[in-house]
Length: 130
Image 1: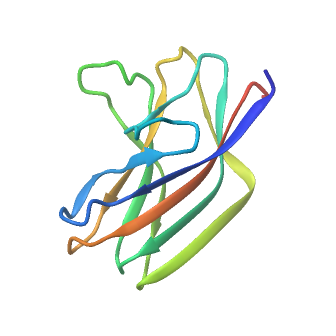
Image 2: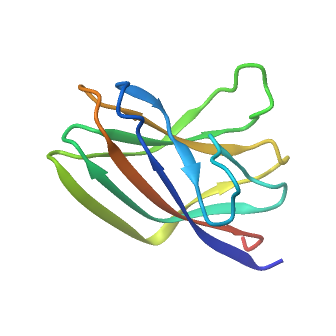
């Protein structure tokens, strides 16, 4: 298969202080709340860019079974804006999240002290490389 690198984009809803980011990409026809990792593949997170209001915390989460009635999500990475603005983080070595059974998935959540708009971009590669 090789690999497919794409950018996921999302934003907070502007009316709540926490939630799950609806993700969009040029590969999708509509937004999604999580990305399922196909069996035998790995999701590599190469970069993140976040912007918006101060104290916004974005969390990358992973679950082993997104099909469960109440999936258990593990916090993998967190990025917090210390002040209003933008930060970009590029990885020399990506965060690697594996698809063992095809039920694994990732999502992004947010929390902030006051409801406002904030934005996130994630560079994600799906690959069969180890």
